[in-house]
Each structure stands twice: as C-alpha cells, then as structure tokens.
Image 1 (tube, rainbow, N blue to C red):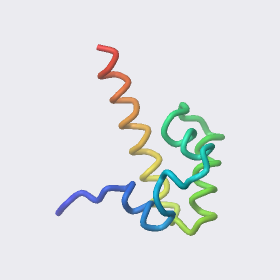
Image 2: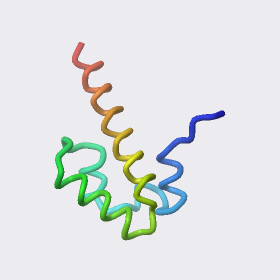
Image 3: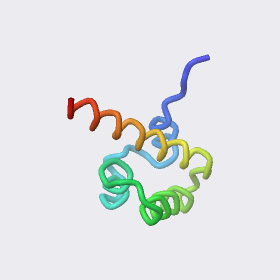
Image 4: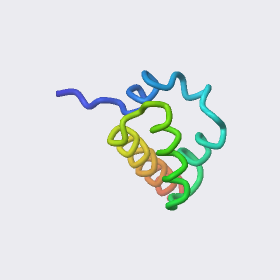
Length: 75
C-alpha cells in the first residue's frame, strides 16, 4: 500500500499551498510547535472543511520533517 502524501490530501480540499494565508503557512511550516499555533492551523483547516484527523496528521508530519531537516543541516 502506497503512503499517501498528506500535503496532496490537504491541497485537494484547500487548493495549492501558495494560496493559503501567509500566517497559516508560517505557523505550519516555519514556527515552532506550540498550542496556540496548533489551534490556529487546525481551526483554519476545520473552517475550510478539512477533517480534523487529516489536519492533525498533516501538521504533525510537517513538524517531524522540519525537525529532521533542521537536525540534518546542523551536522
């Protein structure tokens, strides 16, 4: 079974990431994890009809990938 790309799933609902509000892109891809950022990102997704489970999976995977990238580039 192929692993589904969570970005493609979210973009199928919201459209291309380049059209999302810059605050959401920043909180999702750049800023550190904190409860306030999670709430704002998930609220944006929920308000735009993205199921909460997909939104949480997407947010979590983004944070894992970013942390891995930051670690790998610091070596």
